[in-house]
Image 1 (cartoon, rainbow, N blue to C red):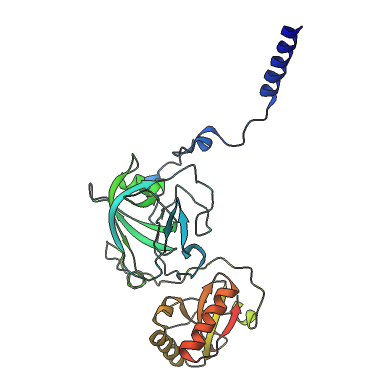
Image 2 (cartoon, rainbow, N blue to C red; image 1 turned 135 degrees about the vertical axis):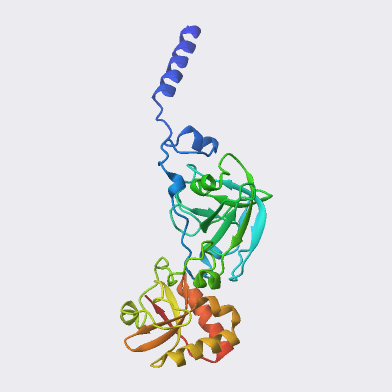
Length: 307
């Protein structure tokens, strides 16, 4: 009787194991392994490098301090030509299609990269000293978090540098806004196209005064540097003028009184007026903090707007 009871319990257990639903994740994901996807697009060596654009360094968001594996990282917020030497790795299917630190979707076949501390977004020149190959990538993610490694490349970027077989030494250099505007990042000496500010994701703040006017904004002509209308987001308006020279004078005044604000200053034309704004910010709270700083340092009366 006891033997028959034990046999019945064993059969019940085997049946339960056989009918259990399979995991939705493939084995490589569960074990943490990375690598190539099953299908690799052809002609990856022909994928063009990233084309640098002047993209504002946002306060907060992907540039907030963060902690990984017990170590705290303080992202750099200055527009400076950071340069490093170290090891490069690449990341693939484990993260392909997932969200990057900047909120974009990671594509292992695009020309992107991750850095633990550089401002997001940034553009970088990456060089393989073993063969002299160079690529330009857009840094839109955080990582790597292994000692000695200075950058995590997309698979295509690693392939073009011939460092896709494993970890390899590289030299990396962040491109500054001045280098991008002047086209000095080009190795072929070709003239630079006009550099325009790239759009940023919209935030979920409520509509504030002057929203419709901002939506209809047009680029400023002959501004220095030349920029388009501000990206979507929450902004701090510092002033509006009929004469462009007055707007540029205000920008210079703010730069002198608050040097750290330079990277966030934008001038654009709206219905005959040249508006000077600071941003974009990820939230209305961050914009209000910036507005209070402006009032304390410049005695201006800023206005928070969203577009």
